Image 1 (cartoon, rainbow, N blue to C red):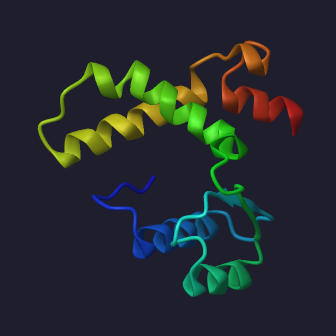
Image 2 (image 1 turned 90 degrees about the vertical axis):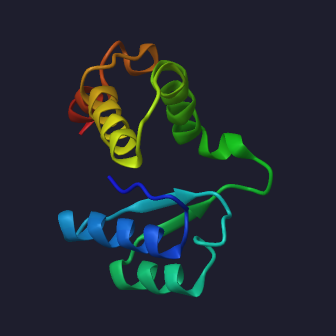
Image 3 (image 1 turned 45 degrees about the horizontal axis):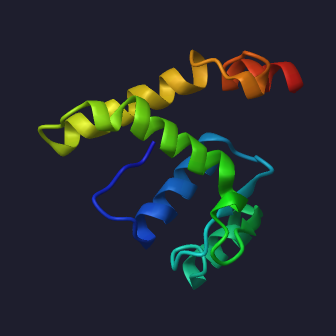
Length: 124
């Protein structure tokens, strides 16, 4: 998990590089909004290097990216708005812990009452 003070090209590129190094040979589809990071020449070069398919939301259509929009809304409701963070390190630890909880232990009606990782294993 990568977290930074700003969403910039180095953050996006490092995150993608890290994901593909951790999962060599992965056949991936990376969906994003139309932020400058994802339309940049650097991102295009990265997609060619790792041969991943790119998908972008339509302009002003946040629902095209509904799964991650829902995740961040749930995170804010269940975690972020209920806590105070003394520093960036504490925030990063909290986000990382919540992602682990969400993927492994938080059951979802939309996933047949399974946590996301349990559901993924069933459909694989």
